[in-house]
Length: 312
RNA sequence: GGUACCAUAGCUCAGUAGGUAGAGCAAUGGACUGAAAAUCCAUGUGUCCCUGGUUCGAUCCCGGGUGGUACCA
Image 1 (spheres, rainbow, N blue to C red):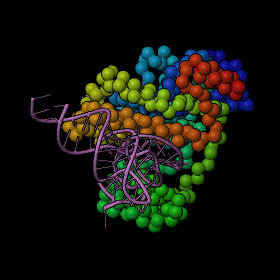
Image 2 (image 1 turned 180 degrees about the vertical axis):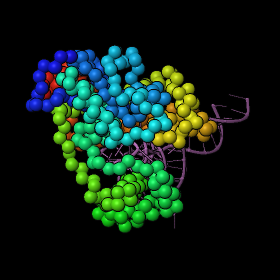
Image 3 (image 1 turned 30 degrees about the vertical axis):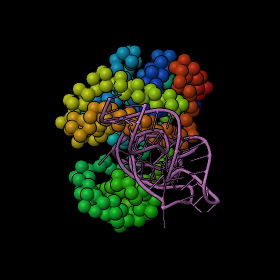
């Protein structure tokens, strides 16, 4: 697409399409990308991995309709990755793409990853695997209390505000203090960074009961396409973080012989419903989100285009 | 057709020596700056099947329905 204008001296416009799993984000994004002859960035922390496209409902070649997709299947489950790297990778890509595209589209369901691109994330050290092991040991031996006490010594201020029953929060806090020699509080500034491009956030909304129907149907579909085989292939690597994911955990329990297949499928559906709920909780508090009704693809696309034109 | 047992939350069930009830799961609301499809927190859910009787008071006791399960014909 020829670049026509640059609004407010910005490089371009990033349209973010967010929403719960199975809300039809992917299809909407592709239609919008066709309309503006542009490209798509995926903000989905599990579709990154090339070994698990089926179980993460990653877009297929056919669904992509020739639209270039970035950050889909670009990593192996054996590679380490995190939000901060994603932020930098996306910013770099956008800077390049905005030279030739006025509009870029980012679509996905990982709220933290979307926030990192839109607002930035504080510069903090990446986790050190050795340190993680040590922290895990402490958790196993002393539980969250042990971690909480440790954190209180290192950063009493963070200890006051942190969710003290959440081992991951506690571990991260301790980890940053130890790796930097400074309290986490001093470095966790949460300042919103200005971006050199315009951002329009859109949320795809569904009535709960209809979304639940879609989730159930899609789960059955994914299984019919051979999800179980995919799970069998990665089963030997089950300890990897990338596989700590809705669906795989349950299918592994079946492969272990702990659950019947029917049981595993029921659990997948339940856990997917819950995942969708958490995604909505995250999105609802973001006041910048413009909501569109996802129940019918036609109006949603028209609404989207209207929103985009309003900003351009 | 007969006999026995059962009927309580969306589901599986517990319970009330007669004073209108509670667990698990599901569900709902929320938090969340490097594990985020992760991790964590909070919260209820009710004609106790219907209908007569006894009783100050029945989800509980008694009678009659209705439905289910098992066994016998």
